[in-house]
Every structure is written in C-alpha cells, then in structure tokens.
Length: 490
Image (cartoon, rainbow, N blue to C red; front, side):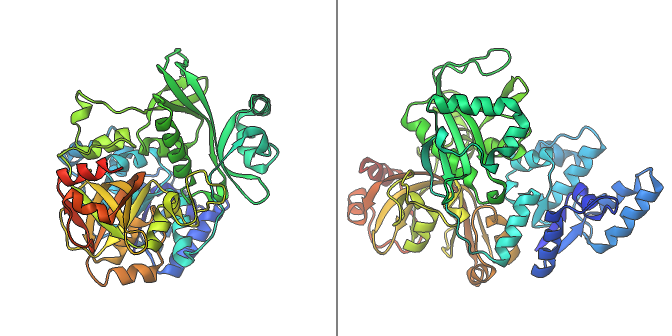
C-alpha cells in the first residue's frame, strides 16, 4: 500500500529539536511491520528547497532520502483545479492541490494530513474515505495488525447527573471552559437534562451527547433564530482512547433518529476548535451558521424539500445534504442485496440477534462497522449497474429471509487490487488482511453506502406480490413498481 504524508507531518517526524509525537513513532513502527510504502512527492522537496533557513533546509532535505519518491506524478492543470473547485490563491494552496491530486489520480492509496482545508477539498471530490488524520491512520494500522477487539458501546439514555462529573472524560471540556463548565454541568443536572451515552462497566462515560429541545432559539451572536422545534446537541464528545471506532457516527445517528421521530425542524451545535467534530458534521449535511460567543455554530435542516432547486439535485447530492432523507423516485435504481446472518448482525446492530432496538441496554457493538452510518459491502456479483444515489434493500438470507434495512449508495467500484480495496474500506469497516486477500481472488465489487434506516421486516413470501420471482442469490435489480409495492408492505 502506498502512503503520502502531508509536509507538516514529515517535518514533525524528522524534527530533531523537539520530542517525537508518540503516535507518529507508533505509525512508523506499524508501517514497517506491515511493509507499507511511504512516498514523498517531488513538490515537497521543492517546498523544502525554498526554506531561507539554510541549516534547517539542509536537515530536512537530508531526511527526505528515507522515503520513496513518486516518479513523474501527475500535476493538475489550471483547468483541472477549476473543475475540481479547489481554491488556489497562493503557493501553499498550489502545493496542497498537487499533493491531493496524487490521490485523485491514483498515484497513492492513502493521504495523511491534519490540514482542515485539505480535508475539505478531499470531501468535495469524494476522496474523504482515503484521507486520514493521524489518529485515524494509527487506528487503521493497529487494526491491520490486530483487527479483533471488543468495546462496550451500547447506547443508553441517562440523566446527566448520572454521568460521573469528576471522571477524567470531562477534563478537556473543563480546561476549555474553566469554571463555567462545572457550573453549567451542575445546572443541567438539576434540570434533569438527558444524554445519549456509552459508558464502561463502572458507569464512567466513554462517549456522550447531551441534548436539549428548544423552540425557535436564537443561535448566533446576531440573534439569528432557527424556526420551530429545534434539537440542540449541547455536548458531543468521544473519549480519546476510543476515537476511530465511529462512536461519533453512532451518537449522531441517534440524534437524527430522535429528530425524525419527534418532528424536529433543525439540529444544531456549538463547537470550539474541535476539528474532528466539525468534519463529522460536514460529512452529514451540517452547515456553518456563524458564531455564538467564541464558539462556531453548525446546523442541519431535518426536513426534506418537496419542491424547488434542491428537490431536483442529483440523488447523491440530495443524500449528502439532507441525510437521512433520500431520493426514491424513478431517477434511482433499486436493488435487493443478499447478506448472510453474520455480516447482517455486524453491519446492522439495531436489528441484530443481540438487540431489540437502538436503546437496548444490553446491546453492544464490537467493531467500528457496527457503529458507522457510512458502511461498506463487498460482493463478487457481476453487476455493473449500481451507481451513487441508488437504493439498496438488504435481504438477510438463511434464518430470517427478510428485508429489514435500507441504505443508499455513495460509491461503487470494482477492483482486484488489495491496496485499493483496503484503502476504500478502511474508514468504514475492519477486515483482516487475510480476509481481504480472500475477497480479491476474484474481482470484487465495493459498495460504499449510507445506512439510512431499519424497516418492519418484509418476508421472502411477500416478494411475489411485488413481482419479484425466484431466489435472491446475488444482487438483484428491481423496477420502481416492485420497490413501491415492497414499501407499501411496511
């Protein structure tokens, strides 16, 4: 697998004047263990060459020889930059664009950066699954070495006062807000405010979303009001040791489900220098609204347009903006996708054998793919008809023989390249290298999709009434009429 580090990460790894970040040290060990290849881009060497500090320039250039150099990587033209809608206002932007273009052009498999602007550019062209922050990349490498782990991540609803305010979990927030945090926590505890949370066996929080329902609240310094019923995510936090396991997506899914059920018009939150939370919000259709004191305000509309320009958006754009709403008219194809019991339990814990619902107290997810909204499905099906925005209905084979889950496709790619397969699914699921090698013995269809909702079971015996005949042994396309009849059976 071919890896490209952003220039700032290369500098941090090789700077002899400061201690090495232990995460970067571990990354270097694991890359060596896994025999992955780290490259530098020729433009990074040019960047170092321009350093006016001769001693520092010499040191940095001397250390670049540790890495492989990309040979004749493609350079984006002015027209390419325009089509990709990447800003390029200075030399720093130019270099960033060239580095990201190496990923866009398949010269590398994974790009590692802490630069928010680069992450936003990657998201705009659908490359976010292959761009990693340091923590995400370290977690990915650790999973490649030891993919099996067990974490107690059952979502529960608890009163705030039961969340152990003296736990180390709250320390980062206490430092950010100082005395006001303890006062605020005491206040909302007295109000019997509730939270969705994941706790360890001692009851200490591991991930928390404290929420509050409001009516047309002012949400910015300019007193802009979100009209109607509004859900505020007052505190949204995942413990550092569990970051990378997609608990944030799980909490966000819970908030969306609550908002839909309770006819909430908008969901919003405040954030202060929390880049990972901002990225999570942007991935799921939140927009920046302004400031509230020192915090940034992000909000999401929780009702779908029924007319106008947005209603006519391409189905995939509609999904990205209005998730969990989606297009299901005749513009999109519909497929029945067979999935066996084991993978169904793992991908869809809300309807697994171990849980009766999202808030079941005994429910636990052991792998990131259980927690994600953005999931991956692998198949040896020969179909080439699956496209972004298409609807997939998962048919659990074997015991239940029923459809209980609906998803929408983000991307579909066929490959027999292990590195391509690993890079595309790494943020969404945990497979061992041996499992992935088994898959690529044949051309493998990778369907990256969003888990939208569970539906009341539609049994195999009901398929014939919708005009669907025969066994479901591989991905099966159905017409819109059959899909509509299936939906009527809910």
